[in-house]
Image 1 (cartoon, rainbow over the protein chains, first blue to last red):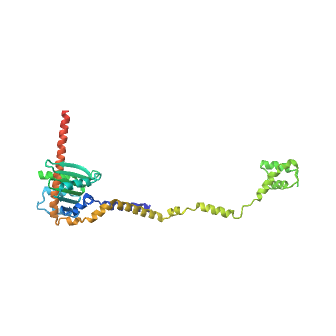
Image 2 (image 1 turned 180 degrees about the horizontal axis):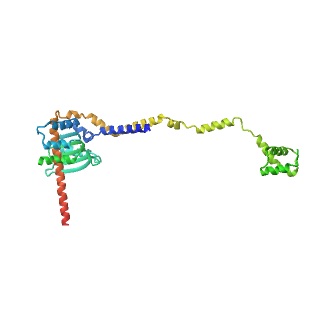
Image 3 (image 1 turned 120 degrees about the vertical axis):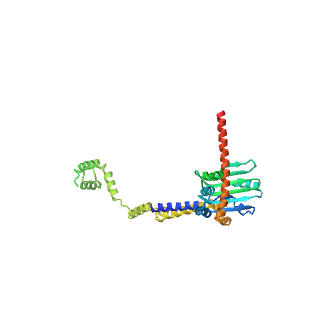
Amino acid sequence: MKWIKCTLVLLLMIAVTGLSAQANAIDKYFKQYVDDTNFSVVYIGPTLFKWMKKLGQEDNDGDRNEETEAVIKAVEKAQGLRILTTDVTPKRFYDEAKAKIDTKEYELLMTVRSKDGDNVEFLGKLKGDAVEELLLLSIGEEQFMLLSLVGLLDLANISKIAEEIEK
Amino acid sequence: MDYDNIPILLDKYFEGASSLAEEAQLKAFFAQDDISEDLAIYRPLFQWQAKEQEVQLPAAFEANLLSTIEQQQSPGIFKRLLLHPMSRAAAVVFLAVGMWWAYQTDSTTVVADSNTINWAAYEPKTPEEALSITREAMIMISKELNKGTSRVAKEVVKVRQLGRID
């Protein structure tokens, strides 16, 4: 029986290692954009997310408004935010990016097309009902943006941010 | 030898009631050459018995038999390896190595790619800055999300209205 236990522990360890090596779409498909000088890159990691939460808690003088509160709540379980933007040949990069994404892995959740030609695509890496990664492809006349938000996300909480602003 | 009782002994013999001494007597009788014709028909039976009793097993028979049985019973190298206590541990190690290898080959590109990107270099220097960026990004996501859902909601209302007209 002991050896069965050992096997189970070993398998569990392997599974955990697999989870910790969770990749995001940008690492997977758009590595070369990060190195590309035409792109501006921003990354917010898990540590900064933790600090953000603390920042609000330490603020007792009422500086932290409901809007910020909603933002912090929405990113409560976020592990990483990666934003890549470029104003050089945005259409070309947008088409290229769309062709690269494996639609089996990233499901198209929503497309929002504006009258002025702006287009935003919401793609999600889903695990059951939860969203593990939200990937945004946004194209305007002058800019292309690629945004990846990794972590357990609640779209309802994200939606509340805009509602707070409109209040 | 008293020949008169031979027919009686024979009857007893065929009935299975003869004693060992009586059977020995019968064998001795039929070993002779001079036997009356009516009894001579039984001679081959007793001569065959006497002859068969003389058959001996070869000297090495028992040893050969035992060694053959032992050979059949002893497991082969493969089976012996399987029965070895360490084989379980070896199986676990083999399984783990196999899974690790499968995982490595499956995600080589992903792992290699994330190793090459130094994401820390793109992090804002202060939490305030991070919050401001996150805020802007989340507001944008939220607005777009709501734009999409409100449009869907409008479309649903339209479809429902059409349904009523029909």
